[in-house]
Structure formats: C-alpha cells, structure tokens
Length: 152
Length: 302
Image 1: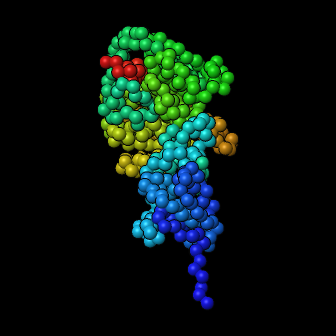
Image 2: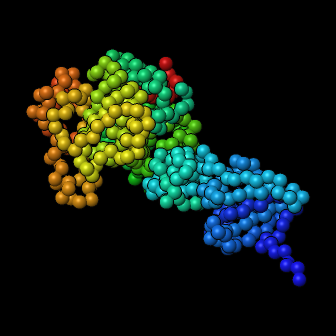
Image 3: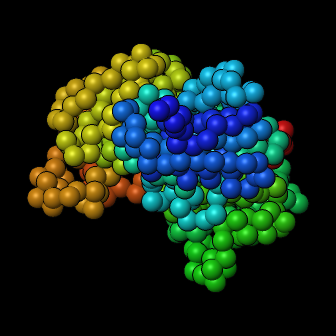
C-alpha cells in the first residue's frame, strides 16, 4: 500500500510560506504582518513538532509576497523564521529574517517611567545590539534587553 | 536652526554647541537685549523646579519676551486628566517656543514631535537636562579658557545623577580625561564606561576622596541622596566621606574650579564658598546667559 503523502498544512500554488515560527508567537507574527486584515487565503498549523524549536508553527499565504523590510519586522518574535517563496508549487527562493536597525511599534519599553507607558505613543527603538537583542528607546533613551522584551 | 528643538545635548553638533557658548559670552557682556520683543514663551513645569524655572524666566525677561505657563501640574489642565499630547497641541497655538519640565522620561522628545514650535527640555525625569549641560560647558570653557584635554573629576552620585552623565558624554567630544569618585553603591553605570571605552578616552575610578584631586582642572560635585541607598547603614557610612572641605584644596591646581549643579546640602562645606576656586554660584548665573543664547538660537534670532 502506498504511503499517503502527508502535509500538516496543505501546499499552496503561489505565495509565501513562513516556517520555523515559535508556536507561542504564531499570533504575534500574524498581528505584526497584518495577516488578520488581508483577503488572501491563509492556512496555518501550530504546535507542530520541531527538532529546533520544540513546537513550531507554519503559515502559508497564497498570492502574497513580502518586502524584506516588512518581513524583518517579525525578527523579534521569530528570529529563526525561514521564508519560502512559492511559484507553481515550487520553492523559487528562500529567505531568512534579519533584525532591522529600527523597531517601530512592536516592542514595549521596559522603563516604567517612559512616556510610551503613560500615553498612547507608538514605540520606537534603535537596535543597538542584534545578537543579544538590545533596543534603545527613542524617547526615554533607556535600553530594553532580550530578557525584558515584551511584544505589544 | 529654526524650528528645531533641544531635547538632548546630542541634538546639537559640536559646532552648534560652540556657537551657543559664543553667543552666551555676548549675553554675559550685555544681558539686557530686547531680542524676544513681541514673542511669547511658554514655561510648562509639570513638576516644580524653582531654580530652573527662575533661570529661564530671568533669561526670557531680559530678552524682552513674555511668559505664559504654570509652575506645577496641579494648577494646569493635567489635574483634569488632559494628556500631554493635547496640552502641547493647545499650548503650541499660544506661543513661539515651549520650555518644558516633566517627570516622565521621554516626554520632551514626544512633545517636540507634537509641537509646531521649538521645545526646550528643562528636564524629563532621570533622562536629560541639556540646558544644565550647556551651562556646565560654558562654565568650564570660561574658567579654563578651553574645553580641550581637561581633567574632569566627578564626585558623589555617579549612578543616578543625570547631570553627570550628560556632562561626561558632552565633554567626551573634547578629549577629556575623567576621574570618578563615588561610593560602591553609586558608581558610574557600565553603559557609560563602555561609551568611554568606545571613544578611547581615559578614565579612572576611585572610592576614596583623597589627594588625587590635585590633578583636577574641574571638580564636579553632586549630592549623595539618602533615598538612593537600599541600606540606610550604607548611607550613614558614606554621607560624610564625599564632602569637599577647604583644607582639601591646598594642593589643587591654581586655576582649578569647583562646580555643582545645586542645590547643595552638605557635600561642599561652607568654608569652601569664600575660596576663589568655588565657582558654583557663578555657574548658576551662567545658566541665564546660556539659556538666553539657546532661546535665540532655536528661534532663529541673530
């Protein structure tokens, strides 16, 4: 008997596959990329087994191709994410995410006395270290490190 | 420089800082000049700071400008729950420049992005207080004749003192050497040491307040505040260690000057006041001239 070909999330003809998303951050990725506001067909699976991440999520978006600047916005929540660009069911390009130089509106400033934690201000950070993430707040100038990083 | 704000001393290039200092020297010679005639300056003090407010208001008055504003949040619409955003939007309509003091960090940068007029940060929490730094630079240049290659001693609370951090970063533009004297609990934070390392500047740390001050061109004193200590016993141990007394000044350089952002409590003994090396009261007067210069620069008045 032929082994049935199993895909946890069915293949797409054209579009983008975002793989190796930490399962716990799936919905943050969806939110950051604004996938909850677009009309494209989207399928995703979560809590899939992954040797690297333990539990991972995968997102497949039909007929959607991202700019690098857009996709890099997920670097804080899915630093190991891999992107496959699909055309006619074939992977035509692979991309990895890179931490951008500036982070706008994704992270929360860890300084409780910062204006961004008092009023409705879009947070802005300069990335001062990419390896062990360190973000310098544009407003209060304090550093938020990886251990204290909270995604809004 | 028209319609720009001064939120952090880093907002000004070295050339711009020198220009402001030159300008301040002119105001020292001739403080009363009606350059702000017909202009309205808002002084918004969301937390009280009598010294800074009076210095600004004196500067504005000597320039012939008019002042609107408040000296504490309870007498403003903040007490009715208005956001900073709305206050700044509204006040922008009434004035040509905003001078703002606010307890929340980053509030000045935020205000400068909302306001249609220049904003001068008169202190935003523990973050920045650039006009203090500017008057410190003015005092150093005036007394030493230069900003280049000086040996700066900083004493007291080097952990929380924002004036110390800003002055240190500013002086690093002119190849300063730094000596930091502080109790263990109030040592200069690592991020600033890293900054000096990256700039390849020399600095030395001491816990004892001794004869090493004989090398100083400038001694910058700060208050050691009781509330900074987690352990009150530690405070009791150090509170009398970081006190500058007249007898300690014997071997110091003839042209050495003592600065202090004020208010002082007991960290400079009153017997120092009559020593010609004491410069802190003159330093406060210099604040008026530098603020005059900053106001004119930001308003594009030549």
